[in-house]
Amino acid sequence: MAHRRAGGELPRGLHLARRATRRRPAAPPLRLTRRGRVVLVGALALLLAGLVALLAPASRAAGPGSGAPTATVVREGDTLWAIAERQLPGRNPIAVVAEIRRLNDLDGYTVYTGQQLLLPAWR
Image 1 (cartoon, helix red, strand yellow):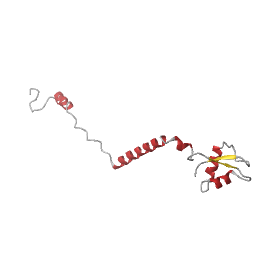
Image 2 (image 1 turned 90 degrees about the horizontal axis):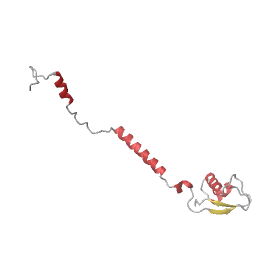
Image 3 (image 1 turned 90 degrees about the vertical axis):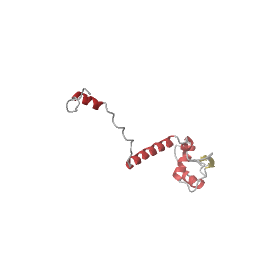
Image 4 (image 1 turned 180 degrees about the horizontal axis):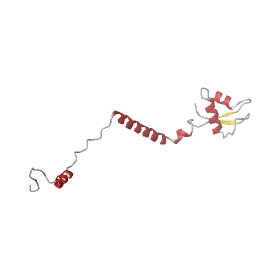
């Protein structure tokens, strides 16, 4: 203990060196508040929803029909709307007309008597 001064004090340089070698106490484990937990759960839910949307089967995204389309022949005076209401009652005629046009590669809404049309299989 030759480094101690007359009052039991350490010389100034030794005192600072000794403080620098002390270890800090271990930090407490991370604690989340209620708000933090809500934010974390919400972020994870959004991430999961995004993954589900990306990994959805392509067959469901291709069209609402399930199965093979059926066919019908256009009668005199028929319109796409009338065919949609007659062949698929209870369905949204706008969606049915759009699907009939897509299935038959129709550019417009004109159909001709005797023309054969594919219908969506939404039965």
